[in-house]
Length: 414
Image 1 (cartoon, rainbow, N blue to C red):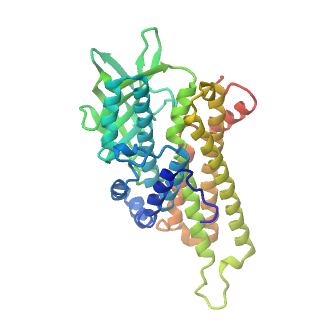
Image 2: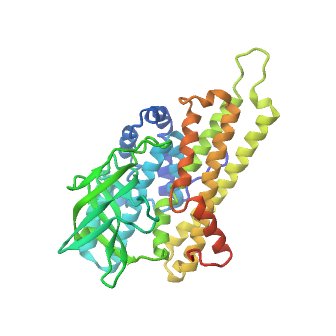
Image 3: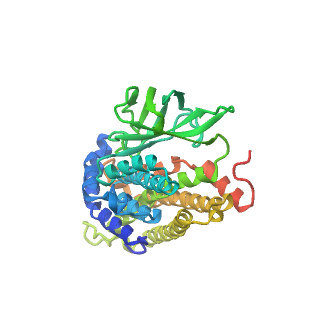
């Protein structure tokens, strides 16, 4: 496709090539999963078999050793050309693997042999695609960085109670990374993350996913009722308060490559519109829609929007990769992280908007046929809207964040 994003590393190029090999198959199944509201289990099995899901695991653990989040985004965009639900499912797992690699490397660097050995075993399972992970952060009535789900310490265990929503991959996950809060001995709360294994007593996948779009993602709710988890599976972090640079960086690592889904949806819609416009009409004497000036303008507008979105995503991706590759603490300062997040949020708002507007223009070109629920543009029209609800941030918070940072203001001030 003209002007498409490409990977910047050898491992990333291998991942993107693998992803491209799945597009036609994903597209052929997408309509069925959308209509039936079924998890994309067959697609996930294919991604597991090809090595896509294990791509971010180190080569010594059986993965491709992909470290560039920019390149993960490119791969996600390719998957989304075939099926948006599969793309966001793959991202959630791959980003979790990427995070586990960072934790393992940190434990190795700190000389924490016990923790490093635990993470090494997890990476062996992830590299062999024997373990599927899901993140469980979102919950009703809570800010993205202020979990209400509570973990209470009892001797060498924690007891967890709460409810999560939008838990992508929950239909097949073997392990859930659950955002929780724990009581701070000095008062207030601290952030924490608990690893809860599927099958843990008190853990229930609610099976309640029935959404407007991304219907194949299996993003069910999660109910935790007195779930007992060993203390060594709970990582306690900073006190509650405004997001720290580490909070923002960690969220960026998971959610930046997710923007590839919006890009891929827009690219798929553009291609459908072009193919329709260049098709010779069945009615004799009529020219193809491509010859109509209004169609040409719509296609040109889509081309411009895609070019701008790709440019912003590529620039933001390079900044994100540079942030995580930095050795100098000054490069991970609060100001530096805010600038990277500012770029990420600009890319998010633009990618989300471009997905919606491009599908809308494609429907205008394709006409009434695209209004049918079985037309691929109908599914893309609904899938495109998912990006705007993904935190952080939605548009209501994203615009103020960008504006405040650009103006030299504290983006988290009341």
